[in-house]
Image 1 (cartoon, protein in one colour):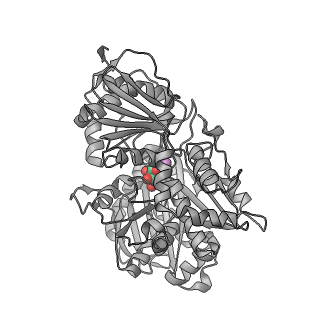
Image 2 (cartoon, rainbow, N blue to C red):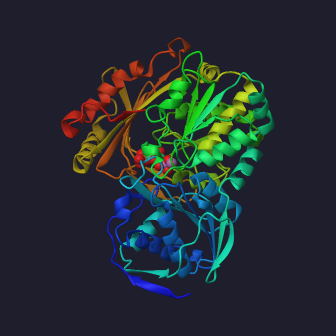
Image 3 (cartoon, helix red, strand yellow):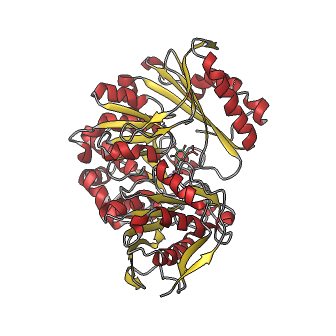
Length: 544
Ligand code: VG1
Ligand code: CO
C-alpha cells in the first residue's frame, strides 16, 4: 500500500482549548483542515509510529468520515495497531479505559462534548496520552506549534473500512481491531461497584430511576449496564440511541437541557433517582425526587462516603477540584485529613495528581466527576457511584445531601454564562477586572469585605509547570467567592462565565432558594464587571 504526501498549507486557528480542538463542522470540512491537525499529532508523538492508537467518538455528524481519514493517515504514518470502537463509537471515559487497559500509546477522541451536533453544529478532536488522560498543556502546545508549520500530510489511498463489523483486519502493515465499545468499560464498572447490592435495590420494588442519554454516546453503555446487568428495568434509559444530531437537542446534562428527567423526578409520582450524561459521556447530572444535586456537592458527598463504596473502601489518597468548583469538598478533605488540590479548569490538570497517587477523586462544577479508575471525568461512573451509595444507605438523595450539609455546612452555588458575546468586548471586560485586582483586598463590596483578589495561577506540584491567567478570583472574608473566566470550549464569539459561591453553616438556613441567597453576590459580580455596559446583556444566556 502506497503512502502519499499530500500538500496543504498551515491553518492558524488550531490551538486546542480547554478540551481539544473544537470548531464548527463546516470548519472541519474545509479541505486539509482535519488532516493537518492529525499530521501535527503524528509529528509530535513519535511513539505512535509502530505503537497502538485508540480511536472513537461520540457518534456526532462527521464522526464516521473523520475516522476513515484517521485510519488512512494512521496507516501512512506507521501506526502499528488501531483499536476502534465498533460503529466508530467510544465514550470519552471508555476511550481512556481502553488506552490504559491495552497499554496504547495514545488515543484520538472525536467529540465536541455537550455542544450541539449535526451539519450545522460543532465537531471536535482530542488527543489523549498513554496514561489515558487528556494531553497536558505542554503536549497540546507542541501539537499547536506543529500545526503552524504543517504544509503536507501523509495518507494512503484505500477503500473505507466497514466500522460495523467487529474483529481484526490489516491495512498494509497496520492492524485494525474493531471492538465492542461497552464490554471493557462495563467490566471496570463491575469491579468498582457492588452490582449485586444495586440489583437488590432495583428488585426491592420501591426504587425507580431514569437515565437520559440525550441521544448521545452513553445510550449503549446505559442500556447494557443499567438495564441488563443491574436489571433496572426496560424504559430506565431514555433517548438511548446515539444520533448524529442528538435528536436536534443540546446534549448538556443540566436542568435546562435535560428537563425531561427534571419533570419525571418531580412530585409524588416522580422517580427516586434520575441522571443524565452529555454528548461524549464524561459529564453527569444527579437528581433525586424534587432534588437537584449540584456537581460541587456531588463531589463532596462522594468524598465523604467513598468508604462505603466497594472500589474506594480502603482509603482515598486525596481530592482535587477545579478552581471555580465550590469549596464543599475542601471541608470534607479537612475532616478526613487528606489533601485537597485546587487546579485550573479542565481535566488535563488532574492528570499528574492522579498518576502520582496524590488524589483518588476529583471533579468540576461543570457536571464532571471522576476518580483514578480512568483518566477522564466519567458520567456513568458517577451515576453508578450514587446508585451504589443509595443501595448502601437506603436513604433518599435529598436525605443524603441534607445530612451532608448538616455536618459540613452548605456551599450555595450558581454559574451565570453569557454566551456568544463579542470576543473583543469579553477580553476588555477581563482586562478591566484584572486592572482592579490590586486595589480590591480590604475594600467593601456591598456587605462583603474582600479578603483576596487575584488572577489564578497554578503550579503543578508534580512537574512544576505553571499555568497562568486561569480566572479572576475574588474571595470575601466570610467565605463567599466570585470567579470570572472565559470559556475555552465555545466555537462562536466568547462565553463569559461567572461562578458564585456562598457558604452557610446554619442548618436552619439550608432550605433557602439558591437564587435568593445569591442575589447580593450577583449584583456585586455584574456591577464590578460592568456586564451590561460592556456586553449589552442584562441577563445571562444560561444559569446553572
Ligand atoms: C468547560 C467546563 C470545564 C470542562 C470543559 C470540558 O470548559 O467549564 O470544566 O472541563 O468544558 O468538558 P470551558 O473552558 O468552556 O469553561 V467536556 O464535557 O466539554 O469535555
Ligand atoms: Co463532555
